[in-house]
Length: 175
Length: 100
Picture 1 (spheres, rainbow over the protein chains, first blue to last red):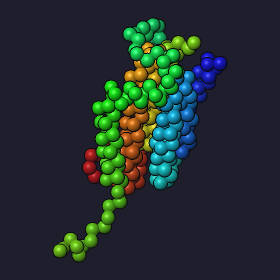
Picture 2 (cartoon, rainbow over the protein chains, first blue to last red):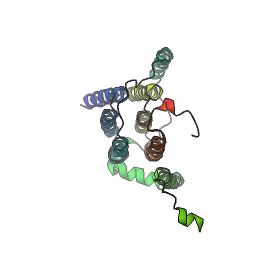
Picture 3 (tube, chains in turn purple, blue):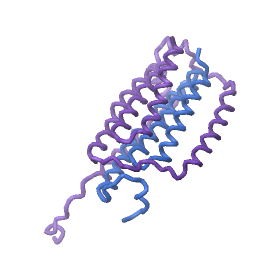
Picture 4 (tube, one colour):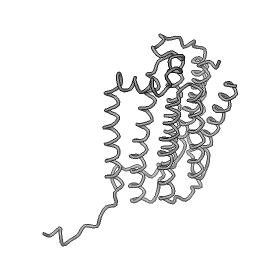
């Protein structure tokens, strides 16, 4: 059963990823990206990461993708006739070959490393959100605060950049 | 039981897809979407290693990656709006000046 779900989620996410970069209309690309994000969230459930599953759906599919679609509809783009770079296709295929070879080498690795302190049984006993919360607010408190400041900076930057430039009032300028 | 290599393979294929998208698309918004695909591939990798090596660090870094992706999308789309106002285009080939 797990195998079936893994094959389903991974195949659909790969197909959706290819469609995201292949569709001509940008809105269709956004909808294919939504499919990809939801199926990646399914992969997170298979890996016992329920909190990350919820965050993926709420933040990615709920907030980021809506932002993309809003901007697409705001700009009202016309679909380009030539929407791909085809000049460098040979380099692209060579790179794909090299990456495939590297992937084959990588997949033969046993991936044996030192085990951490959160075995599956302990995670399942307390729940994933509990374990993530304890870890985040003890060992990763400083990175958490830094990410908070980063998000504040991103909000201010986005507002300042996208603000409509107001027409300069000549009378007040003179005074 | 699914081997860790399977998750790594899915993540590698998704990352390559996103990379090709960044390289071949001309629309700036689709380029940003391809970056999101690459970040998702990295997230799959992080969570898979976190599960199989029994450590929580991977999931927490994945959460930080999602936060950074949100910030990147907000600032990137704001830049797109500013550029579009001046040029009426989101084609990356036409954005070859730092000032106009």
